[in-house]
Image (cartoon, rainbow, N blue to C red; front, side, top):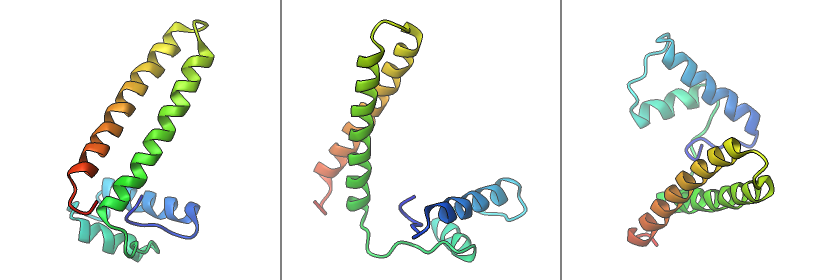
Amino acid sequence: MHFFPSSAPALKAGAVDLVIQLAEESEWPCSGDPKEISSKAASVGVAPEQGASLAEMVTEDLMLERQQIEVYTALIRELGDQDLVTRQVLLSILVETEKHASELADYLKRSPNQ
């Protein structure tokens, strides 16, 4: 998502989906090398992002993870004890999301770019 932004999100998603589909179908072999993926994505109209550092992308991801944590927490609170199975599923997703956010925050603390 960060590597191939576009001014038209639907076009970006469609182009990335095309690259993935072609790679999966082996009609367009792809080794998984980031440079190869970048060139193949560019060939279907998705341009690489200019200027974003890894730390900037991780910071953006961390903000999104924190937003997801707020949403899951609100859903769990609203659900209460009405549906225990759904509540348990949401709790397990929340735990994984919190873990991922913690890992991202730890990375940023260790990153020399911050």
